[in-house]
Length: 190
Image (cartoon, rainbow, N blue to C red; front, side):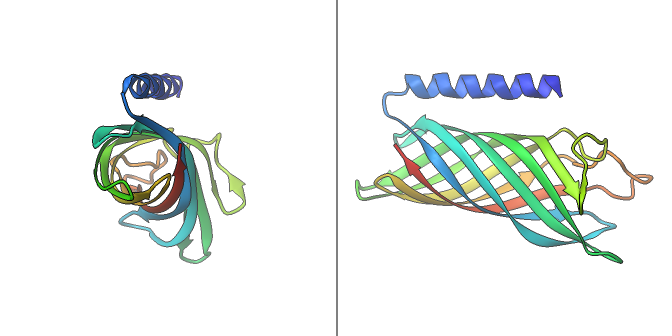
């Protein structure tokens, strides 16, 4: 966990330094709804709506690097004998290539890049599993999305594909749990 924290901190510092060096920079806040897809072969999940809130900093020109620091809650319901809610909360640090175009009134943009999600809390039903060895401490993902920005207001849709199995505990490799999500976000840039 310590190595992951040091890695996240290093990425955040590099993103901040790169954004400060850019001739046209922007920063701001954004948040919205997250629709997570917990997928496993042996277990069925229903989707539940979670949330995301965070800060972004990056080059505001036509092509640039965008760094973010987000808190994301991904939720689902385990379907079976007992319908149990599952919640996983992550500190997410994506580093995204942003390509934008358009006139001064509206700018359309696309984003793509890797992210690291550090687990900060999770629960199944009323059980807090943050200190247990049920879930891995981090996930690595690939983010892709698009949005539109009107002056300082932006609206964005993004898909994050988790690339690692997130469950540590496994019954004879029967359950390989991956998490993918789609988010609808709104924000303000300064």
